[in-house]
Amino acid sequence: MVSEGTAKLLGQLLRVIRDLFHYRHAAILLADEAGKYLFLQASLGYRGRAGRNRPIAIGKEGVTGWVAAHRKPLLVSDVRRDPRYLRGIAHGRSEIAVPLVMGKQLIGVLDVESEKVNAFPRRDLRVLSLFASHAAVAIENARLYQECKEAKDRLQKLIESSSDAITTADNRGRLVFWSKGAEAIFGYKASEVLGQSATPFYAKGREEARRIMGQLYRKGQLKNVEVDYVGKDGRKIFASLSASLLRDERGEVAGSLGIIRDTTEFRVLSQQLLQSERLATIGQLSTQIAHEIMNPLSAIKMNLRILSKREGLSANDRRRLEIANFEIDHLQKILQDIFDYSRALQLTLSHEDLNEVLEKSLLMVHDRLEEKQITVTKRFGRKLPRIPVDLVRMMRVFTNLLINAIQAVAQEGQVTVTTELLRSGQERSVRVTLDDNGKGIAPAERTSIFEPFYTTRRDDTGLGLTIVKKIVEQHNGRIEVESQEGQGTRFIVVLPLGAKG
Image 1 (spheres, rainbow, N blue to C red):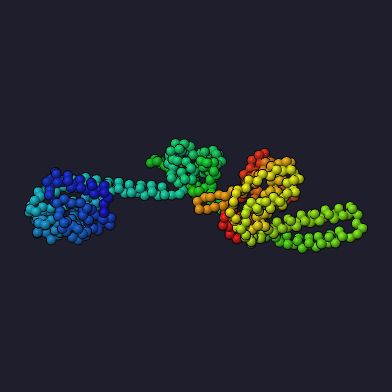
Image 2: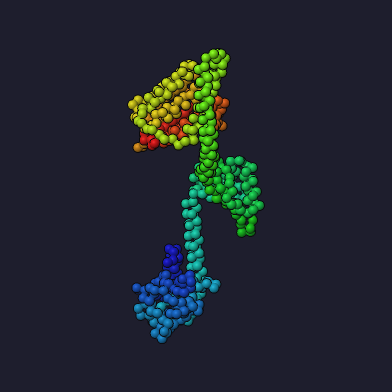
């Protein structure tokens, strides 16, 4: 089937023939791509298209088949005397057919019939042949236009459906094309960036842009080069860039084409996997060391207790034994943290009121709060639903966060504990917020505080917040931190109403 545009052109050509020559029956048959068959594509005056509703084998049947095979015009004054004739109109008597040829390419055949014998003079053959040469060019141009249009449409759909950013820039680095994928990745609409330099999108600025373009000019193309970009919201974008130079008809560089694939998620997942593997190795090694230390440490503690019960010890000796016992307790706490970090948690769930859990946790740190004369403000939500939690471990979460707050604030500092019920569609959860007015956390430290063994205090293992995060996530919850240096810190714990053990 021909395109709508080609079909319209064929109809116009037949109407011109009718108006110029007053032919009543005319048809245009086009050859298939293999050049084996002719197919009727347009006609005038054919009722039911007798003999024309099937393909005609070129060179094997019909006057039109002979014309197509020999690429010569043919006038048949009386079709009853020509065995090649295939009936077209009901009472056909004369037929004239001319090939539609452009260069060496067969386009098709222009065919005219009449119900009269000797209906066409010889000069019609010459005039129709001249007309056919121009018609062939017009038909082929229409075909090429349609093919180009279809190719353009397919390319446009491919570009629009691609999740990658597809961009082009002129030889001065100004953007001239910005795909839908680019809009999604970078956050800028095409209208915001076209005509602008591409340099500001490079995370490392002008030097990085020059380095990339230098490589492109030297090599002619780049494949899967890792580049860091910056989006509209300032978000860093890890990407893979493939690029090539665009050249004009003289072979001179006219610009560049870039295909940018957002690999941020993949990069983050890869880093998380490497981190997990590293932490797993550290955890395994730490557990083995902790086991080796725990047994002799228990023996030392037992013997120190026996020694402390002996009579006749001086006050100085007893003080040394107390220090030794204190340090052993400290070591055992460190070892217990390592065990808790390394082992998978098995939760023992019970339905608890988080307000009551927080009250118990505050009681656990009561002496520390009094020692620093810290004011605690409780803003507990009323009638919170009970949620499934491991009571012991959840108390550890809140106790640990409270101890961090106590250590962060100055004498007579302030700590605020808030609980509230959250609703998001069909999902419900309880949010616990712990605020302090302490020294805050530096931005560089904020991203690392939940990592194992990270600490800014010399007497800490750096596992406290790691274990806190592990417990919260085991409850299908999440923990976040917000802080500004000199203004305090906020820890946010969100727990769903349906945690899993």
